[in-house]
Image (cartoon, rainbow over all chains, first blue to last red; front, side, top):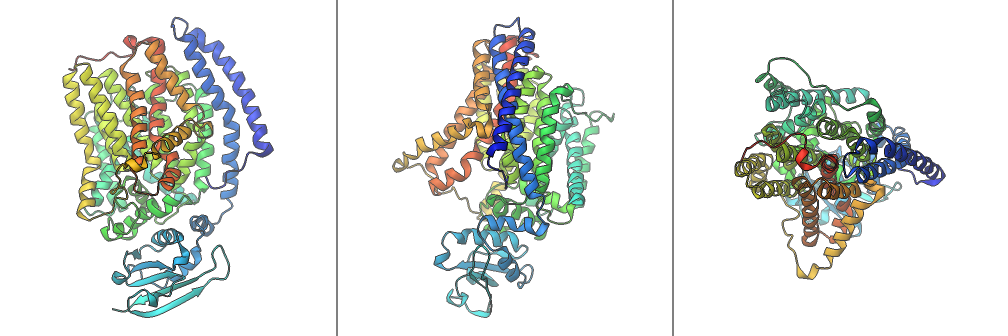
Length: 187
Length: 448
């Protein structure tokens, strides 16, 4: 879940309440279940196991439920477009840059993703986010076999394929201010 | 979003109808009460529609709405082959007080998943894009898959998401989390349906409530990746494996094959867990010299391979990458073994993830063994947990991915299947502890 809160005082209070309810339930289970299992040699041991399990579960329930409700409260305020961007933002990517350049490519065209060495391991996330966000345009592994090149901080004219046209997008804000390029490969 | 949710509900209603037909065909309707009701039928639908959808994708279909409607109608009609009466199996969840906490918690989880954005890395990088590709590229497109992460992973989960997207007529990636909620709810319902005829309500309620409240299950459902679907399908396979082992019901064996095929079609780890489950079953039956049952189990295991073999043939034919293909254990990496072993134990025993679930299972195994005199059931459960643990440690030892990255990103998730399996069988072990293995509800017929 995206927005689980830290326990804090509310969480600790709910845990305390849950523990009290859990203990009370354990007593009830001990009193009611053990006689029902009485002919069995295992009655006491099984009752202890069930009472312990129910007590720990009920003890945790208010706290866990509160965290889920807080997560719901946070997520329910997101608009559809904000929710769509969350995946990229959690990976420190700029979904708007990918989307705006991606719209320039015809549907069903192919593209390769490149980046400067400075981007480092973020390239994988960028590559994967493009693969998700730009469908039905499909990603290919090698620039030479692509119709387009989507680049992050790397001039596509240096990639080693013939380029027909280049679109440049400079972002000066957001999670990752960078220069993005979209280049059409000359056939 | 509400309209999307209703359309997702409609898709799942079709899947439930298909499952109802298949379940009735297998059980003959007569034994429905002992082999599950509405929730079990829904999961039968998930497994059967999921596996068939995978095969249809391989055959060139694109999972359009009419294709799914025809498929579900055909499967639903199968329900009239052996019994022409209309008798929808109703949910059986025991007394209301027992169900109250579980249902209330499921509602809270369902509302949360309704608003959940698609934030988990693997969800938007791997699983949901594959589903989108089925819709936008008109089916299974090898050229897309060749550049997709984990392109060799089986596609039951993307196929289910694609069905949801087709019914929605768009890509409501928040609402699609309800698919994972429905799987969790189906699992919990099936626990009540399948275990209440065999174990006391207090035992079933304790296990079901713990699973539902356990933070890790809700968090993983919100990931919208394949681990929860795999775990649910595998746990159902485990319950039917138990019923086959302890009661000798051949309908349970068929349902075992179906859920095993579903687990195989859900994720790569399914091969590991399903292989272990069948291996244990075969050894336990052969140990009893039940040769005919052993042979039937082997045959069932072969049938279950329909969930994965066609997909593996496709991935080989189209050169789809297996990230783990280069994995080999190395003596230079022996230090990984204690790290991976310790991490898996920490995740499984962590009360902040699974509450007291694993201690309950271990206690239930011990009580069934020492007080109930049971052997088969405890060996099945303990054997699966221990062997799965050893296999997972081996996988981490041999991984060709960066070890720390692999362990940190997957350790929490890979234990979910063995844990949901064990949670499902723990009430049956407790029942064996108090009634004794020889006084189990149904004795095994002479089938071997």
